[in-house]
Image 1: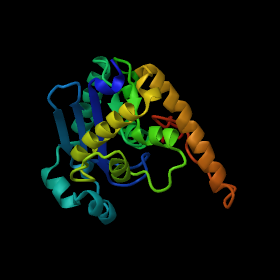
Image 2: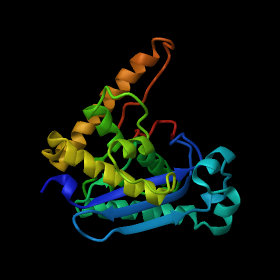
Image 3: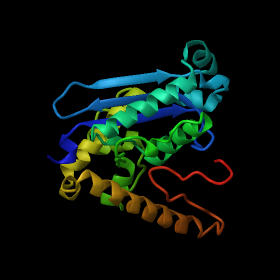
Image 4: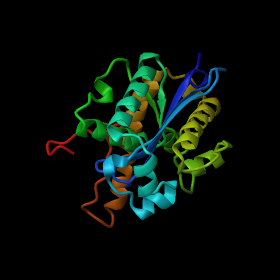
Length: 237
């Protein structure tokens, strides 16, 4: 069976900042869908470990510091449960679908590091990731315009729902991935292992190309090419 016709596990985070090395998880969702089976979804609103949510971030996802502190669950407990949910998907042979996976999975990895938890990559099961963003840049590299989830949903005729909520974004990412597999035969013909490995190379090539572009005006520009998780550095970040 082609991978896009099987079960998919969508994953999305809404956070405190765009830097995955320092941002904290505000909300999260892991949703299993597809293969003609019911949708199974689990969501978290955290207390952000007592930290503040900047106004700019709250304006995007709608969760204020006050709401998170009053209604959120313990962030440490949420991180443990998110890691377990994704590890369970890997154990079941279900790929994790994450839009711009480098951000979400790196952020989750750093949260695990802060709490001394076993990283996702070192847990049971073989983690395979499907990133609609990386795939879209590979299969339609010369298309003009932005490639946010909102734009990809419009391009692939996918209903997004309430954008910038983890629940809606996780499910929408799965639907975009499904459409990509349906539209591009070369993708559908790959095994999950082949697709995962291909995206590692595609992401690196895309980053190198963008870095070369930036260096035309800024010789110091650096674009991260590691995917789906930015390796931890010696300084702990």
